[in-house]
Structures are given as C-alpha cells and as structure tokens.
Length: 98
Image (cartoon, rainbow, N blue to C red):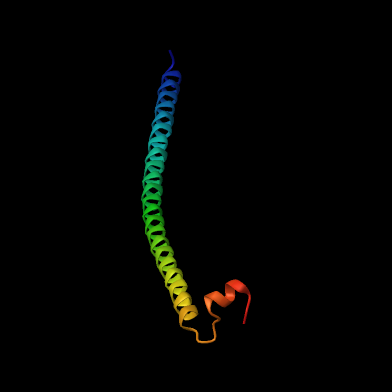
C-alpha cells in the first residue's frame, strides 16, 4: 500500500471519530439543557401551585366573611323591622287593616 492511502485512511478514521465525539457530546449537552429546563419548569409549576393554593384560601376566607356580613345584615334588617315605630301591627298586616 502506498503511504498516501494509509494517511488517507488514518485521516478518515480521525474525522469519523471526531464526528462521533461531537455528535455524542452535543447530544449529551442538549440532554443536560433539557434536564435543566425541566427542573426550572418544575420549580415554576410548584410556585404557581403554591400561589394558587394561597389564592384559593384567601378566596374562601373572603367568601366566609361575606356570608357572615350577609347574615349580620339580615339580622339588622329584622331588628330594624321589629323596632320600626311606623311598622303596622302584625294583626293589622294579616287582616289587611290600617
């Protein structure tokens, strides 16, 4: 075999080996980037879930407070109706007399 054929084969082997190395190292680098991105997404999802839980708790508290205020308003309305001096007697209301 001529020397140039041997050199050509060696160069071809080196080029192929380099291509394989760059391909596998690039793939490993992409996989690592994807892992990092997935971890960031998980952290973001955890934070969003926590904020949603806190918002839900706050909404429940507000709803409970609103219900208490509604009940208090009804109680006060009944008291006002009972103490109103201009309110007709219950007997007059039932008979339709004034």
